[in-house]
Image 1 (tube, rainbow, N blue to C red):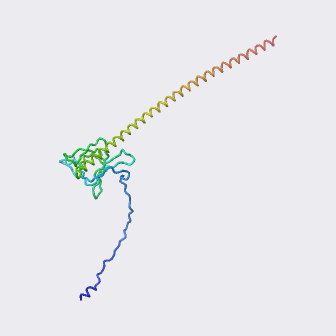
Image 2 (image 1 turned 135 degrees about the horizontal axis):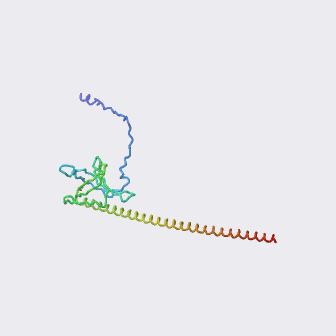
Image 3 (image 1 turned 135 degrees about the vertical axis):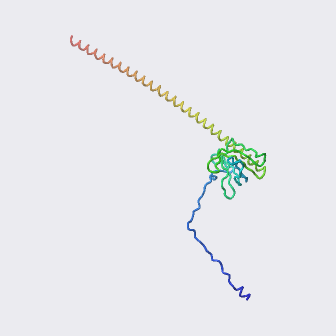
Length: 228
């Protein structure tokens, strides 16, 4: 009986395969990060101050890698970008300006607070008061150092653009002055030409009168000779 049990064949499950009704092609989604280089990245936890709540309170916005990104061609564009773990949903997305200040959060050496006039985490720009907390003071210090460096880069770029704009305005004014000077000289040349033309015309008229008078004199003399 034992041998008969061992000889029994266990039925195998059928290999069932279903073809998809609709085949979807892979689509490449651009995040604009392709045009940027990473200046800093570190894992952290982000909070926002919910002033609309009653009472107002700090609310967690997400945990993930916070990045400081610089545009590859326009070096004056540097932003903070942070996505939540797993879902990769954006929880912070704003440009760094020279006027932003990172301040310690309640005296902690591993957390910072700063104000943002236009955060695009929810696509629509919105003013936010953000706070970020790192695992330790060292990571927090690295973030602040890179943040401050980014501020200076943006400041220098803005100053350079302002100087270029001022120089452009000066050159434009100089070009206008040159154009006015050329126009004035052309005006003088036209007046001189008109004056010269008037003098030549008067001289020509005088010569014609003299020639006419000479011819009349000759005719009178010829008449007198004929009478004699």
